Image (cartoon, rainbow, N blue to C red):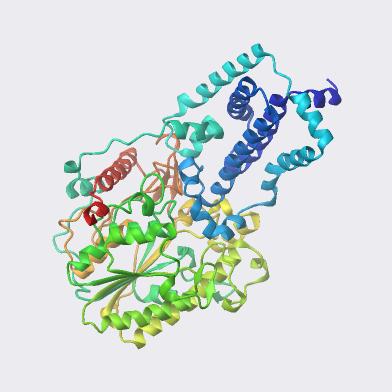
Length: 622
């Protein structure tokens, strides 16, 4: 068949023309999202869904058929584009539920746009061309006339039937796959999106009477110590928890060409308790999820941000525990409290007060809030005022300037990087964290000068990763390999630092045991001498437990967890999962077991069931 004849068929048969266009767009998406890229099966997994939609148009559109094709093409294009962009940050396949949270994206649009490779926009090329054609009246009339012809009904029925069969063949055998990316690749992206809409159902909750601390501890193999180490070593002190924006563990003691990146934080690490195998456990809510996990010792929900799914619940929490012991409880964040529904989260957690952008003002604004310098200066002054009451306080302080996409203003730059880092994502990240460390040094000195530091227990950790593997280009990956001395991996990506400072009893010690954000609450409770006997929690005191199992969600496939010396990443299930060493030494001897895999899943189910069945504070208020 000649090229002219082929063009003629495509222009007069919109079902073939648009199916071909969608296949090309699917190829582009698969190249970015799936490790193995495009395969010959792609056409059998993506085109059948497209043909179902187009067959329906052929059946029911008696007029304006081309308009309906254009609308369907645009909608499916937007879905594929959303999959591309979401994967570049989270490393997961976006679903309709995540897209429903798109109102949060407008506040971080710079972050979103920074992830976009220019060639992604090719996915919209046909739409632009068709728009130009349709504005040319003569061409538009000719195309509409040619494309308005009805397809042969028997052909449409045959295509529809075959396509339905292929979609079911792709979907039904793969429903049990644990890994969402594997599931989307097995089903096809558009099939997966449709499946997620129609398969949505309420989970079966565990009876609250069966959710006990003993059952949780048994699943975690946690044994209560007879004489807990460091118990009450910070009794009666103020508690300051500092959550550091996008701070990853590789920054600790890092030097680039002899230049120390985070000297102030390094000093705190090297003179106090430091846990180097500590990991994030956040999801779609990122920073706000970290606030939830740390203050509740509960896991994030299976979908959505904790601030939106759990913010109406009467949550057991660190603020409530400390309030019962006479503490004043506050939280500080320079963004508006409405972002990620924090206002309701803070009520659910039981904070006495929050300080947001209204308190910090609009002076010295960076990105979407006042700078870390402004955060720390005004927070320190308020902490001094609080300390004058004679009551101990708990304050959760959340930094923000080192936020993705790390576009630091020139007046906040405090270091010069080697030329090879200039203009790179990794270089921008390191420069932002160097500024964050500079501001941290000012905060520490300010607290010391005001007499707050010595009478406080200070806890510091990173909220979540800053450098997703899926967002890095070749130059960035080479720089990370230079920093690590090996390839940058998934265990590195989610590894964050955890430091505990007790100024009245300083001791420098590095801990090797595994820990996560879920463990902050019980660890702090032990140091302050607070009992958790009557409070459900899924973390454990890191000073008195050496074994741990840490379920992961969202940034890693469902079923993934950290245990022993490795990260397990699920495949369709356990048997085809990946075993990645925590040490990053390349040794792939399997250590995580299927028993641990099942226990990690059970822990998540218990947490989901427990939180979902808690009473609502809103009903209590009424």
